[in-house]
Length: 110
Image (cartoon, rainbow, N blue to C red; front, side, top):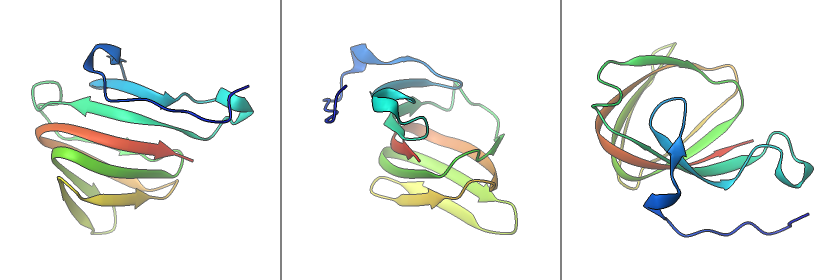
């Protein structure tokens, strides 16, 4: 059982995700922790040409390595996330995402 997870950004390590691709740092369930996982998500406007609804089913913290996303949160908040932006979304939030530029996002589900 690993207690340390380590990786470098490796575009050859990306695999299909629900939308776009992902390079996992820590997969769900590794080390016996079902709710903690993280990695890099890569998505382009061509892969997501229309805004999409995404109910947040676990706490998610994100950091935009590069690119541009817009996240509209039900209730009025609109987040314009570009390189260097961070956000933390709580479980239960109802969101609508728009991919405005090819984006690399580091994420942690907890």
